[in-house]
Amino acid sequence: MSDEDMDRIDRNRRHFLTVATAVTGLAGAGLVAIPFLSSLKPSARAQALGAPVEVPIDSLAPGEMVRVLWRGKLVFILRRTDDMLSRLGENDSNLRDPNSDVAEQQPDYCANETRSVRPAYLVVEGACTHLGCAPLEDFELRPADNWNGGFFCPCHGSKFDLAGRVFKGVPAPTNLRIPPYRFVRDDLILIGQDTGAA
Ligand code: FES
Image (cartoon, rainbow, N blue to C red; front, side, top):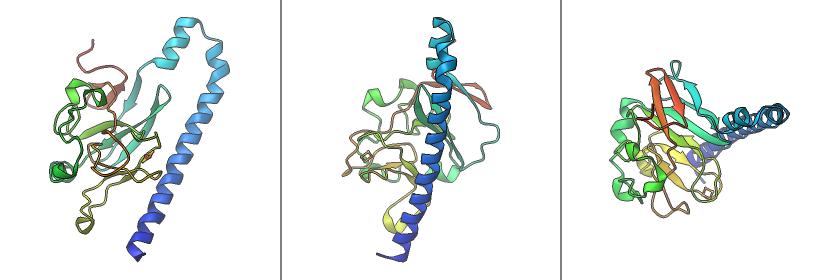
């Protein structure tokens, strides 16, 4: 195994630990929230469990990604750089569903080239479509590996591009799922409510 491979595995391991820590922390918050939720009236409880989640993005720099929890699901928000956006489309022949033809994997308003409402922001569920592991980000450009950056699933090796589109020849059958969302303002995203909703 080359030094580069070892570096990559180390990096992925570190990323996995970061994600695992984040998920554990969020799960812990969920457990703590249960007594609180059970004390709420039914309508308030339903809203707390299923309500849309506001995510401020004013401090998200180009190339950065944040993870949030919506309805118990991990959601990634990646602010793509112009360079990242220019890489989309270069690998279409290696993708299983480059045109987002599987309708269940995104709202209609994200069935486009960037799978997004605004090209700079990818909002995608962090659950591999094989068996649900959390994919790791790997945004480095490695032309020698034919890798333009994207997401890598540590469980069984599925790979997704910078729009969450799945590569051919991996266990995951479909692109990562895009949740319903809309921009409330330029610096605020609401996950769980469709673009176009009042
Ligand atoms: S869960 Fe991701 S490849 Fe199996």
